[in-house]
Amino acid sequence: MLFGGMPTMTGNSYTRGNIESTDNEVTIKTDLIVKGRDILFELDNLHKSMLLLPRDQKLEDKYPELKEAYDAYNELYRGILIADKMRET
Image (cartoon, rainbow, N blue to C red):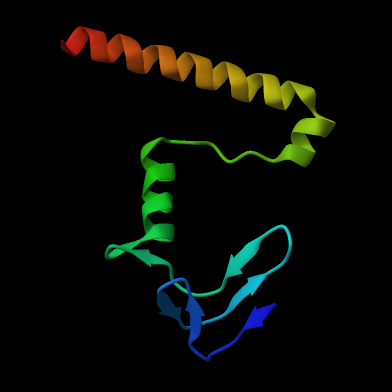
């Protein structure tokens, strides 16, 4: 089902933009603002603040040592953060 530029009734509100839905997913091809907050902006900031490394499943499948290194880094990183927090208290 495709909803173009026409307002579309969804529940108790109207939407504009491009919203596509299938049996398995809904794709929103416009900004998604919730209570004045841009969801993609918030997710990007969260990702940056957590210092998350990007993952590439295809490369990890091809090179298992890449996944092992990623997991080891995350474990060490968490340990350091916990130790730093404990020292601060």
